[in-house]
Image (cartoon, rainbow, N blue to C red; front, top):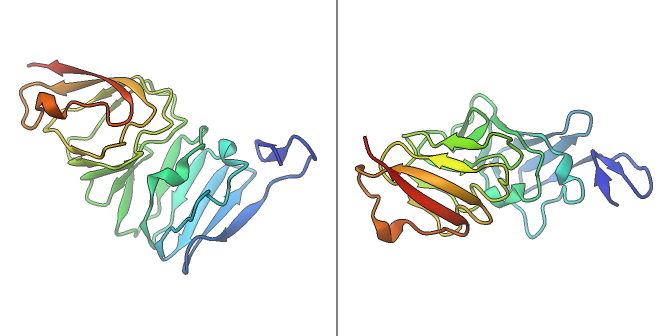
Length: 193
């Protein structure tokens, strides 16, 4: 199948989907709205390709259920229309801030949606850690701004991203030896008050 907006361009079939993603977790795609919902309790588990491979480009919104305890940002690979990642009330591990997936306490940035058209994003000052693949696939993002101390950045946090990052030159942790590409093509520019 070759799905565009959940319609196979080869045979005309409408994509529908859902299934298990671990012992107690599942996924479901609403083809009418482009919404991918994760439900159940526990970690989302994938081995290899995400089960929605083939029509991931039409996914516009993700909802993380209240019982989901672990999300690997790489499961959103290819979701190039994804603009919002939302979290149901009652989830004790995650929250959403303006459609960006964060840890519940706001200290870890898990995933910025691939399909956002905003050319600029300011990382919340509460963020002290950025996950692997957090900005992978975010081709529309040109500028990232930091306002506080340098967070711990995973080796491939910016994989495939070409962007300019502005950071407070006088804040702690912004050592030149840490200003690497982290998998992308990053230009680091200090800003002084």
